[in-house]
Length: 50
Image (cartoon, rainbow, N blue to C red):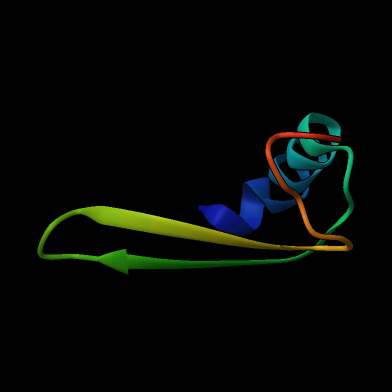
């Protein structure tokens, strides 16, 4: 499911943060039903500043 929407998701994060997404990693805990997304960016983001 992530593979199908990966490009769109990265584009949206680019637009929101003003930084380029270099990578997207995800993991799922099937027992708890929790999912974690980790984005690697072209620069550090702090305090919500673009």
